[in-house]
Image 1: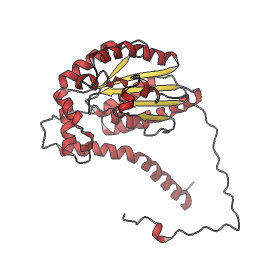
Image 2 (image 1 turned 120 degrees about the horizontal axis):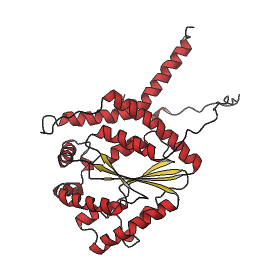
Image 3 (image 1 turned 45 degrees about the vertical axis):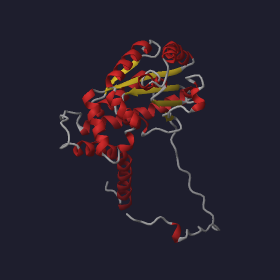
Image 4 (image 1 turned 120 degrees about the vertical axis):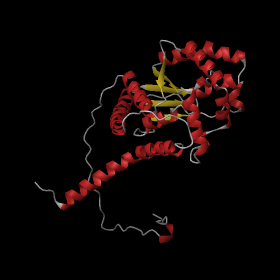
Amino acid sequence: MSLTEAETLNLDRIRRELADGFDEELEMELDDDRLDRMLADMSEHPGRETVDRRVYFKELFRLQGELVKLQDWVQTQKLRVVVIFEGRDSAGKGGAIKRITQRLNPRVCRVAALPAPNERERTQWYFQRYVAHLPAAGEIVLFDRSWYNRAGVERVMGFCTSDEYEEFFRSVPEFERMLVRSGIILLKYWFSITDEEQEFRFNMRIHDPLKQWKLSPMDVESRRRWEDYTKAKEVMLDRTHIPEAPWWVVEAVDKKRARLNCIHHLLSQIPYSEVPHPPVDLPPRVRHDDYARVPVPPEMYVPEAY
């Protein structure tokens, strides 16, 4: 049976709408490629194999579909999920978080990226400002850096005392056990990159005006203190890797593989099933004979520059 002209037009509109839904990921992917090309003549950074682009997109969209199912399950079962993302500056935490949240409802899955504590917060119980961001029933919270700041940047940069540092390690296992006992599902990911890879990514940011804002003075100083951060990371993993809330290390030199592996693992850690939804039928629009649409004044329209 041949399609009518109206049906063909509708199919074209559906295809365009679906393609538009994938454009955001495509834009981010093209942005990665742009940065790689930009430094091709400026760096000795060796090229390397990565996952095929078609495989990457196919798997990413499939995994994002599973994340939507997980989101529905979390809502329906009233679960509370906390996912911690830690790692060196430029390790790819933000990129992974973007891909996780990209298709999800921000009312269900939200990101907590806390700034440095203010004067009042510095006088509070250390975990207090993080507790305020923990999920309620039916919510997922992704911490883009977390209470582990004390074991990393605060330790290396001297923002906490030795006593505060030791008290953190005494407290954090019990704090996390308490969260788990309360019913919170707690996952902790460390994104691991090499010294050479971080240097390359920092250079990318230095030479890209669209990314320079990501490179703070603290990030620059962290380059100099690579070994100090390595020692702090090793102590942190050793002293806070507990059965109730183990650490999971994501090999993140290859950004695409890191994203896919992290999402795949996250999905495997929370048993979920697809939630059936009743079919949705659009009701006919109510029309009134006395309704007249008020015209919008031309000067209120945004100029069509494109």
